Length: 171
Image (cartoon, rainbow, N blue to C red; front, side):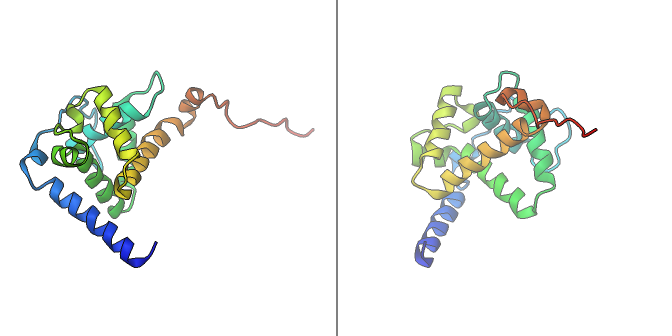
């Protein structure tokens, strides 16, 4: 990628973030259907609710708890660089924003106010977008939510991973 392309993409991403919060559709309240169960460390309540809604769509394990996944993400973000926390927070608000959804996907409702099927469609729109910001954002949110659920040993059975091999000790 040359410098001009990099600058153009950065400008478009910045404009998208700025425009997303500037008009009334950006102020439509989030649905707080999955409130936190304990104190938050890195996210605010709105960002937490958005992340829990994303987790409900990206982690397919039958016993997965979107609120617990969002709490684990919040804990990981609390020890991340401040820039990473800020970027994830901005990304969540961009996904939630009705104006951005209207301009790019034809949906004016916030992500948390969509049906599960419409949330899947919104995430697929991000995954398949021509905008690198949206594709990268989808990948970051999917990987974050899946890593905190499937990474610890308790999540291994959901993936079919039996755990690390055990070796007999030499006699």
